Length: 139
Length: 139
Length: 139
Length: 139
Image (cartoon, rainbow over all chains, first blue to last red; front, side, top):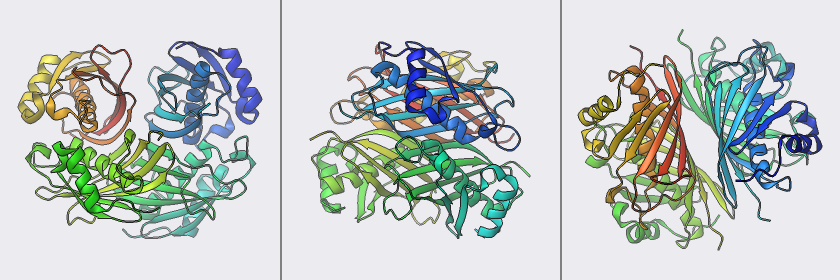
């Protein structure tokens, strides 16, 4: 599949259409396999004890997959998440960002499917994994 | 299963241990089957267009199931979410709260499993459904 | 939603289009909420130790949801499963059938979503739960 | 993680403990990342039309993950599947075997988590993906 939006284009898209949360995310890399997205962990993403909250991890996986899809079909899409299965496997490290590696497994006419691994920056083992389905509206 | 924490006790628990988000949630009902929890939808839960965001719906389902477990085992637990599968089925209505109906299906020694339906207040059809697993630490 | 195929019509459909496995299943009830389907547990559904195998439980949940959809849209559909999340919660009892209670939560133009509880016959607690999404082809 | 059972040892284990289905499966490879398992597709795995059935694909993913766990902890375990999320993405090709590539993401004291990609032999794109959790009993 051809990449039609690079990291800068995706970042700009976030800024324009998701201004409310765009400051949370940095598009690190866009490649043939997918997208790497950083969550700049801030106070509002934390649970008591200093660990990143479940909703913040879910949101990171969701946005990473969304951007992986847009990187192939461009900014016109109104794709919506229809399904997510997420496993929380390890406690994220305190005080570091999270990195999501999203991989697109299917890009069909009406459904896109992919999976995401989440890592604490500098950590070798994933803290969570997610698989997501997006519905892509007819043109 | 016997209910050991009622709505007031769960609300107080939220306030004390999850002060950061406690104001978002109102425990509406606690019964033999489970818990009904309200998300007081505010600006910060919305996506562009006025619909409730995916992470906010995930968070509501997660907290509802957590409280359903605590209502049976008491406030001592350090249960953590290990898995969630969520289906987003309809767009939540703008301008109304969300209600989660959590149902406990299994409460084992080490794992608890349940599911949750999310409704826009006043709506007959669920906007989302989720199933969640919690790991319960050994005493 | 209106029921357009009753239990007898669904059973006949199974016989005609899924002859290979139709003998495994009995449509017990069709109602406004969904379908109850029986798996006539036989030697080939068992794991060592006499418990029903995971694939047999998955298959029961899958067929039950499929029939719940057909009960509303009729036998013309070529619906296919796109996603299933299943939790195995208790060991099925040896020597009894399994019953699936499928509930349709959304029947859209292109996607149908529902969930299923599986019980050992005569048991009060579900042995498994599943949620499934079907893609419905355009007419 | 160290591999404690190689392909031959896993194949022998299948033969001894799962004789009923062992003939369906061939352990192709065991490595640091996980296990590759072949489903020798036969008449009984097919749906009308000649495509591999959902339960057969579920079963392949489940056994592949099971063997990936045993390759690290040895044949003593009584691990049981507690959860599976599976996405069916493409129709398997008729007349060829399926290959499962199982990857272990977490091997904890009580829970193991991993994911699996399923391919039609000779196909570049996965036909399905699954993530699975196994409960590992205390020693």
